[in-house]
Image 1 (cartoon, one colour):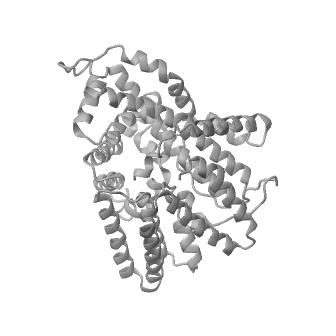
Image 2 (cartoon, rainbow, N blue to C red):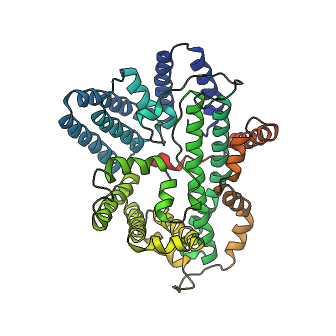
Length: 444
């Protein structure tokens, strides 16, 4: 069961929200979150539930230990949880959500050491297990998860109040991103892999890379919006995970807008403690190398993820050394640069086999680096372009913020309500037809 499944949408979510609001006390609501989160994870991946519960018990014990003993307890605890993450990443079967769970725990331990706070056992357990963020983030800090004053649906929304309607709107937008865009675009990448990368034309290779770039964005942004929407319904405000990244004018800016909570985690717990950019260009480059090496490993121990991290490190380092000033003077060229480098980086991300990566780049740059000996259908892009162009065009449109902002701004007005209802109906219809794919970041 995940956010994009009929049982979750039709049964679990409405029933849980109803029960949650029938519970009068804040402590009772947190207990409900714990029970609901255990049920959610157990239904989704029962065999891993004992590991999740064990990690939670150890994390809470470690937090109290760090609060009492300080730095020695912190070092031992961080090493222990990191060792579990490394072991699980290296094993044949990956615990769903393990990277997000461990990073949540590590943030809790470091923050407890830096600024000890008297949080109750219920606070800590409900924070770790909070099901909206459990499997794929956002990676929210404990202080970001404080509940706001609860307001019932229909009341005038306030800055600090829960808005169930707004949360539902975010959930529906995210559902539409996932089901109506990401799932449809996934078909194009599957078609290319079925054909075989050596046999696709340059035009189809570029179409596939652009489609995959949009698919990954709408898959992960869709999940993040659904998680944020569910949290909002329950009285919690979680940080945004995306901010129109494809409008960026540098790779550095792109990763300040993409998976924002992961970038903030590495900034606060790795980059700044290493010295950040305060100790000269050389030290800054070394610190960036460490961050992007760890970022690649966080996604997986495959060579392709290391190559992905190092590819991005190279461009960000170049921007730090000299490229940034050049790009600042030519914003139009900066946009083109980002829209070229980022899709190329996803080639490493998408393909675990080195041979496939090589073939993909050979096909992308076929006119520049011709490769003979393979039969390529020069007109294949026309066939698949006619099939997928509506989703590519819609993806490009919604990669800009206008559509999403309009829906969020008008979620209580007639046309906005109608648009959200249409998105919801179309999404549920697709799911009922069995047309669904697992969220891509579940594999991390």
